Length: 71
Image (spheres, helix red, strand yellow):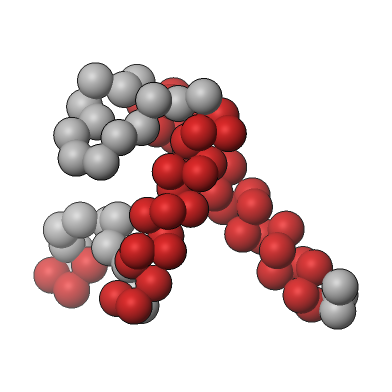
């Protein structure tokens, strides 16, 4: 295992985008009814956390497809 890839996998690759990604995460959690809050969220289930991440990816892919289609 490379030491470059060790550690947290939830780091934002573009530091300037961190606030926007945090807002996006909170918006998605709200849409899904997941009680996500700033700070500790260890009381949420893996399913709840996974649903937020999965839906974020789905929405990002949809937006990219719209951009590629010129819409």
